[in-house]
Amino acid sequence: MTDDGLTQNFFGLTGRVVIVAGAGGGGIGTAVTRLIARAGATVIGVSRSKENLAEHVEPLAAEGLSVLSVAADVGTEEGVATVLERARSAPGELHGLVNVAGGAAVRTWMPATRVTREDWRALFAQNLETMFFMSQAVAAELKSQGRPGSLVSLSSISGMNTAPFHIAYGTAKAALVAATRTLAVELAQDGIRVNAVAPGVTETPASGTYVDDDPQRDRRAIAMGRRGRPEEQAGPILFLLSDLSTYVTGQTLLVDGGLNLRWTHLGDDHTSLFLKDENFRASITR
Image (tube, rainbow, N blue to C red):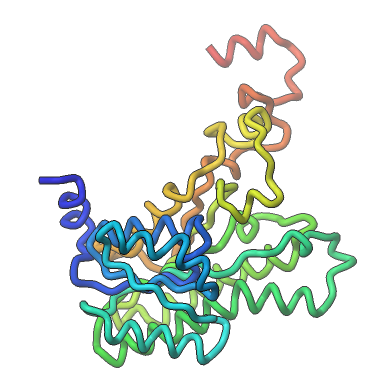
């Protein structure tokens, strides 16, 4: 049996339709689109940008994967309706949703004292409202069909901890975690699971606009000593979509290589910087 065959049988997405909102950025959304299509799903890959779809999503179909591109703004009622209409006509049965659409432009980084109402509302609309109303629509569709399903959204390590100089984004991502938990309770008896993944620093085109390449810094900041790859976020998302996680709901899985574990007082060897005796330091790391 081929690796693809093993993946399809193991994760059980064959014959199922999964919507990926935010598939066209060339990062996590594109990686998860590829992976869940390889696991047998028909994927509705959604992006506002036809150019991004042409560059990142349509080549997946050319590889023989069951991926359908949809240009729509899921931040609008019309965009959500367009996506659901395409999902209804896709081959297979609707099963899941991955909310990747969101993020924040470089200009949104600023002290909390400078954040305007417009900044705040825009980031909440982009990162929370889009997730909620897409989830609402897919959940309603699943309920109308009497089908179980799985909804997965992207939070962020910024929503699981503090987010200095990015307070609106971090708070929106924290609110996404709260929405995930409440939706999970409301939809549980319908067999619809609702979970989230909170990525740490991941090498994507979007993060590349403000995170430079510095392996030494990565080794100091992240327990695993490096930034994540989009494919390493896609794997946990596939798990939460699949039948391997049928008893998991309302959870946010932190996928950060141990970034949250590194206290600021730890050195490169993970020992406390307050230890002044180098012999003692050496003895405890042997």
